[in-house]
Amino acid sequence: MAQAVEGSMLIHAAGITSIAAKGAAVGGIQTTIHVDYGCDVSLAFTTYTDTTETTIREITGWGLSWMLKDDLSDPDAQAVLTKTTGSGIVISGSYHQNPTSNTQRATVSLSAADMTIAQRSYWWELKRTDSGSETRLAYGLLAVGPTVHLS
Picture 1 (spheres, one colour):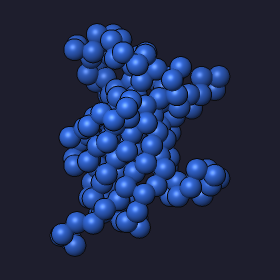
Picture 2 (spheres, helix red, strand yellow):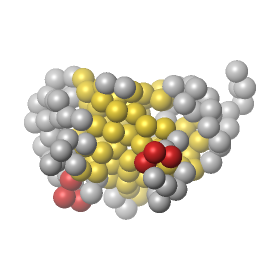
Picture 3 (cartoon, helix red, strand yellow):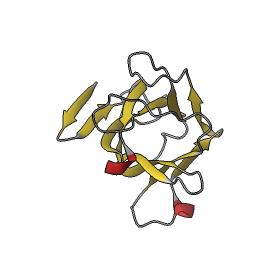
């Protein structure tokens, strides 16, 4: 379930969650994601050329990095989790500039083991990493919360 809040999104991730990554000119969309401790999560990103969500951006072959940190000022080497294209991030589906025909997504897979981190909020960011084209696509907070089942 997603709820729009002044250009931001609040999402409770259960299974696969879709997130819109809007035009680089606006620095991506800010999204708060709530996940359950110790559960598998897939975050599926659709990338648009602008904030109106009328035209899809082709991302085939892009280098992507998804990073989770305790604090924004932490060095990248101290990230809690890092996923990259080919290692936790998969670009799949068929590109079409029309959003209703497009199935292309960048999916970040977080395993149950990845989500056995402290139950609190972290900073996350999805970034294009290709030289000369580095761009933040989406960012925000990821809140890890408790579950009733302990195994």
